[in-house]
Image (cartoon, rainbow, N blue to C red; front, top):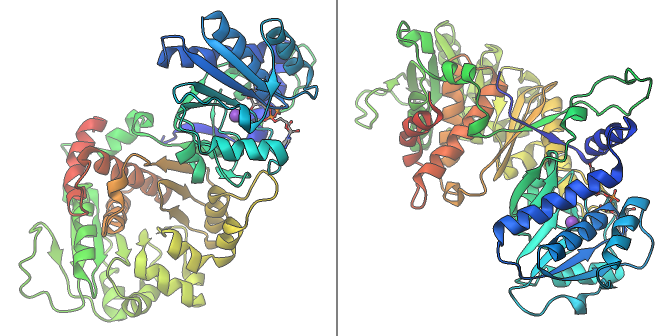
Length: 517
Ligand SMILES: NC(=O)C1=CN([C@@H]2O[C@H](COP(=O)(O)OP(=O)(O)OC[C@H]3O[C@@H](n4cnc5c(N)ncnc54)[C@H](O)[C@@H]3O)[C@@H](O)[C@H]2O)[C@@H](O)CC1
Ligand SMILES: [K+]
């Protein structure tokens, strides 16, 4: 079963930590020592020669981790400066602070004391998952300055000011880390919105909590009650997460024939190149047959690929007629279609209630016609980019653009999940942090920060085609959309610079080979 790596919310992380401590098998102090040890270890791995480091320690346990890092780097021969706060932190952090004070002083946590030498490392241990409101006064000034420094910045749990539930900054200006070390699991904010860009490389350190992540009993056998972690609701999906069943399903069996892999119809319209890109992608991803459906009679169209079939589809009745063929297993409407043509063809297309990708002009048509909206069903996959999402869900987009005053801030993940619930369809919100949400399902995130060349005309048409091809082959909408996003990003990654949308479908065989399909 397609799954991915669990992502936790901050509340889930806290619940797991509480469950671990309530068990009596580990203390908060021990967890803090493990966390600090993991961070110091990662720093020494990447900067093997001891240098100079300034550790910025905030008011809570994130700061406590910072004091552990300071102690451990000092022990490893680093020249360590610590900037911290006077107010007494919680008991564990206070203990770690005292242990550091036996080694060295604590300077005030002020912007003017940031290092001036450009090579000095900075460890950001000001705020982690405990940030609940925008930083103020001296800390706000320090974060502003921190956003400007060019020194390598290592963040403990996250760059300070980031809301780890939403990936949005509660501070006005955000520091940018080269390396972030987080604990036990990724949090949503590492993967979406500004967090994706500002965390740098994210390392997940195992601090021995995984047992309690799976823990589901309210009372342990020894009679102790523990706080239950809430259900895991989202996953990060990467090529390495694919399971043998999915890979087998992506492959083709020697006994199968073309109809075993479905038949996709791709509606073409005023910009036929877009639909051809979708159709080519649907073929490459393994649909048995793909038919391009233009509005003019396709008497003599010499455009490749020759493997494409063509069928004239003009009036709504033509669509209804085409969908009576039970061998048609998926439909794609939107790329280059034209809003009027999409609006005319959508009623019979949706009435057939088969698997269907709705992209581009189909989304614009749905945004202005409540009847089309009402006809959506759970076989549909909506694939909006930010602008199309804003037309479909203006209120959700407004919430995303409001400056958050408290954490957890409303996130792109929240928006995609709410949109999927409202529409009753699977929804794929495109971006470098593509979010795939389906009603009553866990959401998935596919990241592609390292594929800037995907920002090119036609890339979305290819994605729509890949998903349509996978739907045609029998993948359910949630899996088809998730795998589609994954294959699409990997195709761009493998091609690299110079990519145009036409290249993407032809990279799919290489993606499959790399996956081991
Ligand atoms: N969850 C876990 O399993 C573990 C967490 N650890 C660390 O503990 C951190 C969480 O610690 P805390 O809960 O103490 O929270 P933080 O250390 O992230 O934040 C410190 C405190 O600052 C206060 N605060 C929030 N917003 C503020 C603002 N704008 N201005 C001033 N003060 C503000 C809050 O009261 C919060 O408790 C994690 O990020 C991680 O670094 C580790 O020590 C070990 C294990
Ligand atoms: K931090």
